[in-house]
Amino acid sequence: MLRALRRRVSAHPRSAASRRSLLKLIGLGLLANATRGGAADAPVPQPAAARARDFMTRAEQLRSRALADGDQGYGAVIVRDGRIVGQAPSRVVVNGDPTAHAETEAIRDACRRLGTRDLRGCVMYSTTAACAMCETAAYWASVTRMYAGEDIADRGAPRYGGC
Image (cartoon, helix red, strand yellow):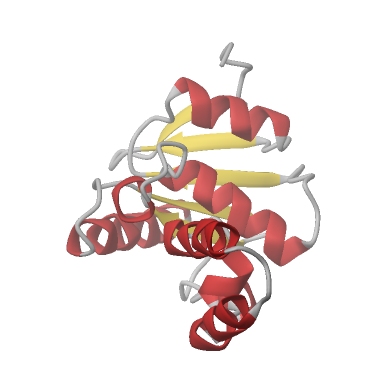
């Protein structure tokens, strides 16, 4: 899919600078749907039981994936009605995007999968406490509650962090 998109861009009659700019965006992963190949449509692995420990285990697996990919060691999942509806490892380094924290990426994934920006009724599990940016993103997405760390500490409802 990415090759076909690059061929279309290269064949486009616009300037070489425009083609380079578009290819750079694709390389940075900013054109998510073009580069992910429908990742949002792939089913999310669900734990055998809908328990907090199982959701945190999934977040920890995503943290391990981030480390294996050469990124920062963070992972997060978004849960609604006992099912994971969004998940992500940190992608700050691999995407070259300082906002691609695991929590914001999981929020983005959940919003894509659910087709809404309103995550009311959703709970976030992350491997560490959310930074001010991520907590603010959870606040604006209306995430109901956040849990963090190996001890699954209840961090409460997200608050506006002043980002």
